[in-house]
Length: 227
Ligand code: DX5
Ligand code: ZN
Image (tube, rainbow, N blue to C red; front, side, top):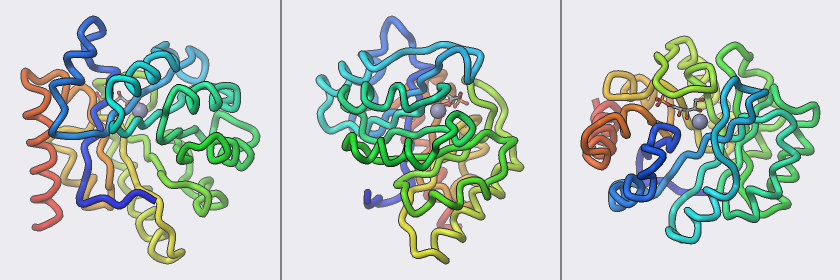
């Protein structure tokens, strides 16, 4: 299990400038080593993004990065091996995207990655209960997946609170991550609900100085927990 020293900001590369993604990532070094990669197939979500080759080049240029791969694809079993051999650390799959969630999570572990599970805003969090003991990360989608720049859905905070309670009650150790609509105004509620990993796309890459924004979000998160 990963041991964190405090809330972590995971910039989502979906919002990074496509022709300058290398420079954008380089500028973040020192502020965070987590990178969130949104993989979209045009079926599970109405959008397309990138594939394992981006993960492979990130791994070869930044050995110590934590590559957090969020698969928004139908039947993710088809791609787990490819992302594992490309160098993913966490591979997170949607409960809605497979008929065989348990098997797919085992596959992620067997491929040498850390298994993660996630769910859309309209899916009950109870659906995750049977697999919580198998995962190292639970991702709560706080927007409908597919696009950056959407507004945070506050009702999803209740799912995060439940997951934080269940973690203690079950003596479990998964990290809780939230993804979508996170920025200076929403990060405090997310961390107070129990979020460990805060994914931020447009807030980070829409800012003039992405590294400064990562720093500012981290500060907001720490202040919110201390208050
Ligand atoms: C949405 C993706 C998110 C997205 C977040 O489908 O899973 O990771 O990039 O973007 P923002 O932070 O702009 O909401
Ligand atoms: Zn994501």
